[in-house]
Image 1 (tube, rainbow, N blue to C red):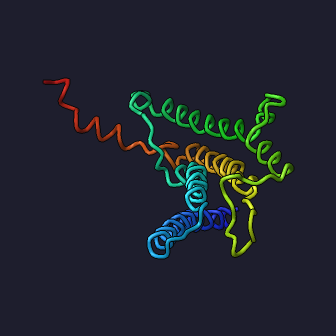
Image 2 (cartoon, rainbow, N blue to C red; image 1 turned 60 degrees about the horizontal axis):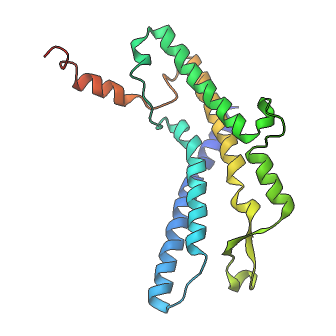
Length: 200
């Protein structure tokens, strides 16, 4: 199982680098084409927006993996260690529920309400393209649009990865290998900086 998680870890790191690289290359290429050759790809901005949306959706799970999501832990830090751990576990469990609910509402009892997977599946079955994103003419020919299901694929993928990372965080908190699902340094730093305020 650890080997599987190591492969996923590596793929996540590579995917973030690929998304950032593609956004940079497309934007740079568009600037060169526009100002150097008075031409360009009309859908470059829209493709960059899709890649950025992918980065955000993918970044949800990546943030949990790295423990860099910000949160306010000032209140729960006032509880005893056992109660603090219960709240930390509750936070991780609620994040799992959030991911499952948005992936497919049917899985949590909201029958027929859909979710990211159902939405992506509908786009795949319909097979329509995105009106604002035409693929490069010199590769695909004229009037070929990016299929919507390709652009929206990151919705279910991002949520599955989010669920995986939140489940991992839950068990890491349970076994004592992790304190919380969020980055919790801010509250500690604020308390340290202001420890004499009440005394003045």
